Image (cartoon, rainbow, N blue to C red; front, top):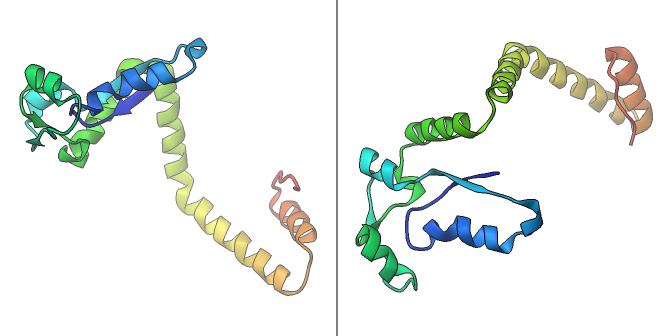
Length: 153
């Protein structure tokens, strides 16, 4: 499944259809538009612009939706974030979202520590490299010192 955010205009409304037709049909890829939808436009009333009459799809679009269209950028970032979150919650299994939230919290809890440790390790590696120690030896030294399970390339 592909979650999609796009403009609500003559061409933007067909992105899912065109992409589905052009992709490998054996994979059964489905598209789900998170934003902008007609219901969101009616509810949020974001700024609009005139339909580009040069677009070959404009006539059908105007007959169905009128002569205005909306760009994804017309939605405020916080509102867009809420729309994305709501869309994800509709299609992503709750256990995946719960795990993602747990991982995000864990990363947040240790971020200052890991960033400080990363800077210290990089500074130490820089000193060793400046002394002329080969990369492989620096990698081995750092892995041994910090107990990291680093693979050599």
